[in-house]
Length: 319
Image (cartoon, rainbow, N blue to C red):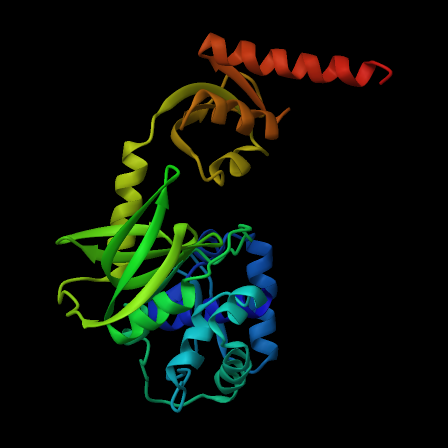
């Protein structure tokens, strides 16, 4: 997993020019301390990583340094963009390509930039660097990958709500988000997203489709995520949060901090936060106890305090 993260850091530095430790930590879902250790590892391996201090500072590569991927075939490049999860690499049949690509990446360094990723990045998108095994199986992933690569339509059987339906799709790309694979496809003149684990059969046809010129996989995915989040229910709560707990709350994926200000209690911050549901609010608040106290709404405060009381009683009993 660390090798995959180091590669992600290197590609981010090449694409953005300069990036702060905080931005890297948030993007890769790790601590800033981990980023410092990773930068040290990159330096030891011979990659010229430089640090600029100050408000506008950050990490960057030495001027003129680029990683050359000349001579790498599509499978090798695909292997680099995928998390090094043995099950996924085996499913796509690219274990050997992964090892070969890493060796080439480590050895390559030329002055002129080479950007062979454009073809691939429009067909495979990794949302987030963290890779969390989902337990799902993907018997049709290889067929879909072949169809995406060759722009062939696929006849699929899709399972949803316990019912199977057959559809003819033009798969435009594959997306991996937190260990789950999706395919973005055009069908009936519309763009749809299908969870690959729910595709029970996939027949690659001889029919070739033309990719829409204005379609960009990463942009479409980000727009669909924003649309999905905007449709989620919202539950607002007022909290007192300890100063040493606020960062943990900010890093929670399903919490939005709407407002924070000093409180009348030293060491505590007054926070207005938005959760998806009351149940989600209870789980997150309990996970960060005793660093959070609910001040409103009253029903949420009662639920949290009642759960804590039951837990305390349980530990006092002889079970």
